[in-house]
Image 1: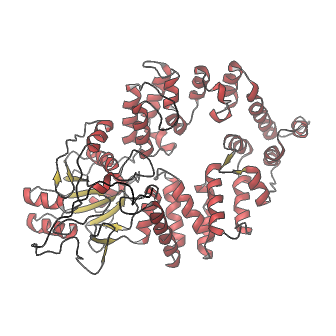
Image 2 (image 1 turned 135 degrees about the horizontal axis):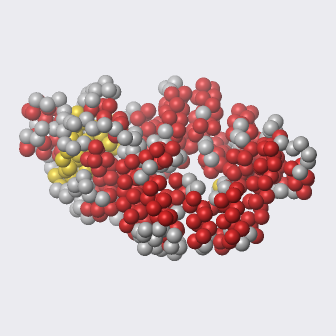
Image 3 (image 1 turned 180 degrees about the horizontal axis):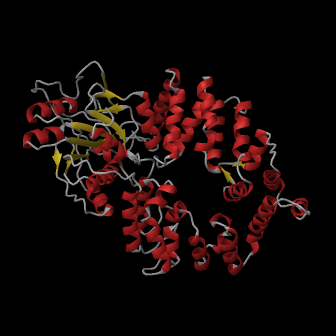
Length: 556
């Protein structure tokens, strides 16, 4: 069943014949276009559309546009950037967002990288391969990139000289021990294996220890390799790599005590442990000692289910301390949206798939709540007056945010707004659909409470001018309006940009408008010719910093 065929929440169409200002279902200027809902909005430029795509993706589509349609629109945007001569600049953007950990998922960035690498513009292609190692940090990323390139190159294979050279370089520039960890931890993805890539890129490493790892991948830990590692005068690198690979191979037949010793002594990770041994609390305790942050967050439910994260245990204390370590979160590139998903999943006490269940530890839930705010880039408050306006119309309850079931755009907007509420003391929450909707949210509320509150609000049509009209009517002194929306406004008597100008005139306040887009469509409420309006992508982890710079005049 397609998105269009499924039952949708009702969007209410309002009659607006009496107002002198152009209603939202008529264009305010020639620069506006009709959005998917039938209203008229401005169009974001292609670079802004790229940023929305890599932050929000197109999985799940929107209330008005299906996933396939949204994906095609974003692919067209990437090609347009290349045609505009902005390909190299666009590559720099996706590198920046990837390296700084500003996106919840790498998949849209990898797709964009593949498109830039397979295009006919030589400058863009060269730049894409130049940043490949910066973006594709683990084999999973590499496998996804290769698959995207193959699909984009059909009916050809796409394995030209530049492509082969870049894939070879990905492997050969790594230190042997690091490469050994990569090839044993991430063995394959979607049918692609390291052996496949070695064959296709014609890998010929110069470094003897890297050669050793390549030969292991191709033929296993053969007697020939064992003999090479035991030769007099063999390099320490080869000895270390052999010792690690030997332990990885023997782990398949180790008992619990041997495995815990191997984890602590040789750095084995969860992927090296036989499935039947992952029911052991002692093995998980050993894994937790040096477990990377991302893996720890992903396995909170599992570790709770087997009893090692009971309240007041050393392990629970270790987890909560780590979750509240801002520098550790930053170093691991932990994205706030992924923490939000983990908080929701952990709190429900069971996975979305499978039979795994657990009794949530409230201390860990509280630490996840703190980690959510800490994972955004910290900023100083502006001390300005903020009206935080959440779009709770019918379209915002449709689909999901960043391709994650259960996190609708409406729920995500509330979580995003809480970041500003925690930073800025002068703020006021409102919700809107075709009219203002009361929202009982306080900055001291836990995220779980906020998400539950939003999910129970009744829906209506979409009128994104409501926050400005409300502030004008109530004579509220507002320096900054932040509207969290999908920009599918259509049911109001006045356009949002016109409502802002009207507010400025009547209140004599040079108020600014920030549109936080929660879907990757191409529409915005922000007038591109008004320097007091800004469009940003929701769940960019640098959003608070961008908002502050704009409010304080740093982006002008």
